[in-house]
Length: 550
Ligand SMILES: Cc1cc2nc3c(=O)[nH]c(=O)nc-3n(C[C@H](O)[C@H](O)[C@H](O)COP(=O)(O)OP(=O)(O)OC[C@H]3O[C@@H](n4cnc5c(N)ncnc54)[C@H](O)[C@@H]3O)c2cc1C
Image 1: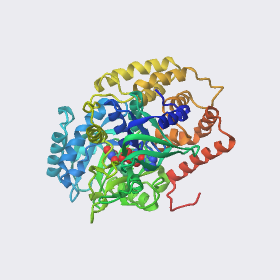
Image 2: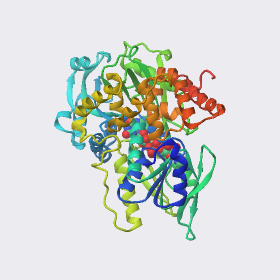
Image 3: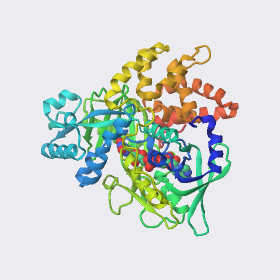
Image 4: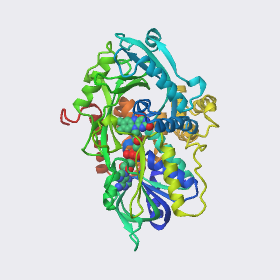
């Protein structure tokens, strides 16, 4: 399998010499899902991503594999049913990146959901999504609700709904999907941008001119079918194809903030009302609590959406409203992230009212564009697109193969074996010199791929690196097996540390850059550039973009 950072040039060379059945543009969850589906049906498949994998929206979500309960209010029954059912499949195929998480929906007098509507809504939700019996919703009294989460506002509390969702790491999910696609034969590379399209004599699209972003070198890739899975950028590519007509995207921005559990000791994930009638999640994770999201129309820079003071203050107000005993100020915010929803424009609707449905569009040249959708529904979206491609390519391609296909790291023999697997592997990790806690974290994060990490851990020599043994193993694995090109790829999308362990980023950034410098033979100038990138990201995670200057 070619997926090491050092093989990128070899991969691009191979790409420029091959004619593919399918070329996917965009390495977010949508594009990676399509690459996996296409390659497992026997199509010769390539994928290019202009930044890092998942650097667009797919590392900036609420990180839930969920059916979207609130969409029931908009009567999007079909979407909720389909996406809801997908939750269990995503979990089964990747138990290391998906964890069941009980969600509490407090019901207050005058709130969005009443007691009966919550009870019926959650019942419908469970049945639409065919949730297993032991995971079906229960309704709680006010007292039981407070037992689950004592921080919830008592004033006007009528009770609560208690139901199951799944928590994920969106970027790691995306990376595990593309690793599986590569393992099955796809060619995929990051930091390669589709610049313009190529057409045959009949005006049919048949290739892409691309630019390798680290060297500036351009090359061409030819393919019978080209898929535009560029998320918030899909309209830019449609414009290049001359097919930007009819429906288009409207971007909305969503911000999350992260606070240490010492200041916001939330025990239980909560989905709650805000003063302006929207709903927001507060989720405990890795010793932190994260809260989001906002939802506002956005026309700014797509690559670097950022938190503003208004976003921050909105979320702090929401916390104050539902958790009155929690006294947070901006000083308590440890980290944040902002993402852009690539929604399909609907005239006259507010950001939160616009449908999250996905749609597939085809241009006269044959460019296939997939827009909208959710992280959770990625597999079904891929199936729809690849069914269409299979029909157009002719030949005898089998139906979708991914329903029972574990993603990379997920092949533990079924999700029900996950806990046994963890226990066995933690013991092995400890035999390689890791503490129990370190071993557990690696097993949880990497699933069956953890053997490679243990192998790296066994070569650890504390005289050669300032990194602790687990970080050393993660860094080498990220370079050798997950095409990590920059320190930020590692700190954001391979480990999520910039969001949930920002102190470790501050502490370890120099050691990571040093390890990467010797791995890639960076000049001092390159090293400085990457160090500055990390420092800028550390700054932007905490300080709103319209506040203090750097
Ligand atoms: C705040 C927020 C919260 C959300 N929460 C959830 C949630 O909890 N659960 C859920 O299921 N969904 C959630 N979503 C939705 C979900 O995150 C998105 O639907 C999904 O990530 C979109 O993935 P994508 O692959 O279509 O887009 P992206 O992840 O943006 O991927 C598109 C990629 O295309 C690349 N690209 C663009 N142009 C080019 C080019 N010319 N050449 C090469 N590459 C290119 C970009 O760099 C980008 O990486 C949320 C979204 C937001 C914004």
